[in-house]
Length: 164
Image 1 (cartoon, rainbow, N blue to C red):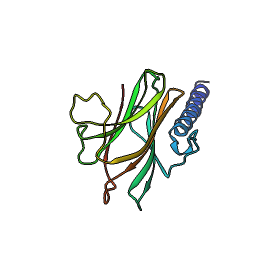
Image 2: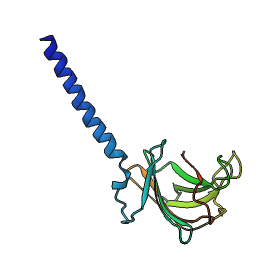
Image 3: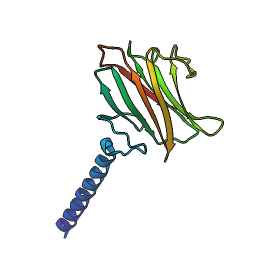
Image 4: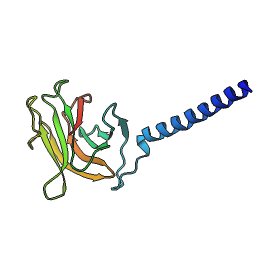
């Protein structure tokens, strides 16, 4: 009897592990995400912290990238930001894309360069052109869509992301 109970417990644990692993893997399969505007991206990377995913397509012919930054687990009273530091590896110097719900109740997206550690994410021009930026909020998730014109000859940058 003791052996039967142990076998049943082990089998139950194994089945639960398989189901939870499958469920976890499915939530991490970011390439299956369907955007409401039917956009598709060549690559997507789940970011290691803050329930965030970066979808992107790089166009080598003109050094541009189209991206969607998704940040889950937030409310519409939060803000989210994602950025690139094209010249270093720290927060200072990062060129950010920011989204929040403004006082009119509209979701707003804008660019904000970070010049020091006391940043207030004030709207401003970045060190590279951003011809398109927009955002949406649904189901406790912000999504920032943008097109960036990156410096030619560079394909590797440091990125940062945050919410508050």
